[in-house]
Amino acid sequence: MAMFKPIDNISLIIFRMIFGFLITFECINFIVSGFVFEHLISPAYLFPHIGFEWLSVIQGYVWYVYFAVMGFFAFNIMIGNWYRLSTVLVTILWAGFYFSQKTMYNNHYYLLMIVSFLLIFLPANAYYSVDAKRNPTIFSLTMPAWVKWLMIVQISIVYFYATLAKFYPDWLDGTFTKILYSRVSGRPFLQEIFSQPWFYISIAYLGILYDALIVPFLLFKQTRTIALVASLIFHLSNSLALPIGIFPYFALSFSLFFYPPETLKQFVFKNKPAVTEPKIIRSVKIPPLGAWGLSLFLLLQFALPLRHYFIKGDVFWTEEGHRLSWRMMLREKTGNIAIKVVNYSKNTLENYDLDKNLSKNQLKQIATKPDFIWQYCQEIKQQYEPDSVAIFVDCKCSINQKTPQTLINPSVDMAKARWNYFAHNDWIVLH
Image 1: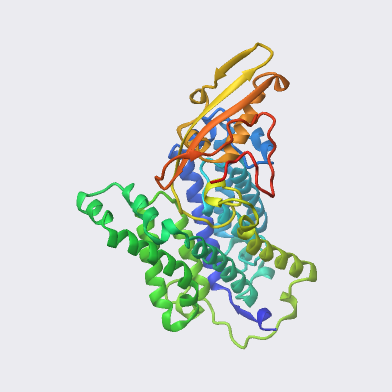
Image 2: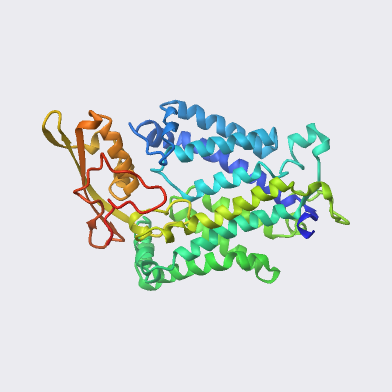
């Protein structure tokens, strides 16, 4: 079978090194930039993904050690030392960070977790690694072709759903891209350009074209250089203009899998021996259980972004099915919220002070996202006698600077409300 044909593994080896470097850099940056203190240590309450509240056992300055350890193992991925163990631990640690808080949610955090998980099963330490020097039996110049196509399919899923998500009115008429670029600070002449309709409408449609065509253009030799140049312009300009961390460089690294080894060897590993006379190698076939597992994993990746179509209401408003769906930078939400607590045991009514233990970013999230509101109401309930309080929410929210509307039914006691994981929560007001 063609998928098991041995091919040069240079793309996977370089990708491993870039991946390890980027995670190492991100861990160090999180510590020295103040991210860890501001978003993980300082807040009195982290908003974990619902169902992962048990991750709250990681608290306080332990987070510094947490990212230092993760950075250490990410560095070992980069150099190919204890590769399998290091990749397993980085996957677990990154997933722990990802699921323990969603205030600073980014789609690329999810992508990093997925790719780290996939790398556990890939022979990315077979060449130019400490492991291969220590244990020559794992040394190899090749990898099965399915490894390359696995990474191409994974990034294709991301771009496909990113394209699909942009087909909504506020993207197509430039409303959101106008808002997005109005936030960019810089020289006055740039701000003047960003405010022009021709600019922000062009950006909207170029975004659709880029997401839709980048993978097909990279697949064909005739358009591959055009696609790479477009990727460099797109991702590097985003890196300069928008606060999206390492994602542009991570996204660019997937281009490695589209280029022939001979091209890559002009820049890296120039002395790497050529792979000659490729044959079908039975030993690199995936065991049946592994093949089924990989198939189910890819099926899940295709299915998760579709779930919001089966939930009542607009995902932009309800947020139900928004995460894990590659719905990247599509709208701006703002809101105002007030929470009233009726304490039956003391016969009192009080306006709950949200400022006393929520960060600025958390306040922004809780005013616009129903799951944050539900979670925090459950947290508030625990500060009283749980069976003797009622909690009511007055929240008005706006999408893309439109007229604010009621988000949460103000007559529902949120202390008794339940969270529905798989369907619409009726206490979210639909419009």
